[in-house]
Amino acid sequence: MKAVLPYDASPGTKRLLESLDPAIAQVSVLAENDSAGLARELADAEVLLHVLAPVTAAILDAAPKLRLVQKIGIGVDTIDRVHAAQRGVAVCNMPGTNTIAVAELTLALMLAALRRVAALDAGLRSGNWTPDAAHLDAAGELDGACVGLIGYGAVAKRLRPVLEALGARVVVYARSAPDDGAKTLPLDVLLSEADVVSLHVPATAETRGLLNASRIARMKKGAVLVNTARGALIDEAALIAALRDGHLAAAGLDVFAMEPLPRDNALLALPNVVATPHVAWMTPGTWRRSLAVIAENCRRLASGAPLLHRVDPP
Image (tube, rainbow, N blue to C red; front, top):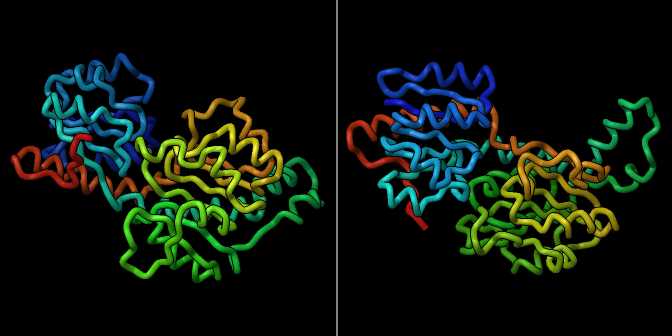
């Protein structure tokens, strides 16, 4: 069974993919911007492995033998699921494979934003051993802080006990009541109380622009915002304004409204922002766990068995 991965995979990731039993699937790895190569490889592909590049109707129509779009991760907002269903192409994701990695980078961004790690690192590299006093005066701690988790899926649930072990008080905004005793608050109350706000919801019609200018204004003055979910959840212009005028102390961001992030984006010029290029999920551990799901779903596809984690069209 032929699978195609249009993604700028690292050498280590390529070696993992090559370790897949060829009797189960053979994976063709392409550069993400190789549109000609993608069109060629899709001509006889049965499986499309999807990371970030949108799976549009045109992509689906270029693959007459396609049977499965296998998302590497959870979010399927970049897949045209309606057209996939019309074409009879299944869409599956991978709950849990990247939970560990995303939770750990979320924690790292919280700490880096609170302690102004990016600005301190840049200052030291430029020869300044004495930090800017403004960075030192703005430094925060998780101990004693209120951390608000917007969304309470696998990543947020993994973070909560870690944050509490570090001395934070954790509150949650979720659509349904948590089954583990987590304290829930209405969204606007959470925003007004939390010293750190972390986003953990998918990008849907209901959540796009969730943190607009009005809601950012409701956030506690001096709060820190962390986003490892989707860039579309935040009004980026309003975030930039709040970071510039000091309403928000800092932000830790792995996702952005436009990706790849343009080099002239104002966020990159702000000393109170620590940013990473949508890599929260990306570790060798995530890829190893993902490979197991890829192999199993290819086996099931070949045998006609029900697929793991199939996602219905919207």
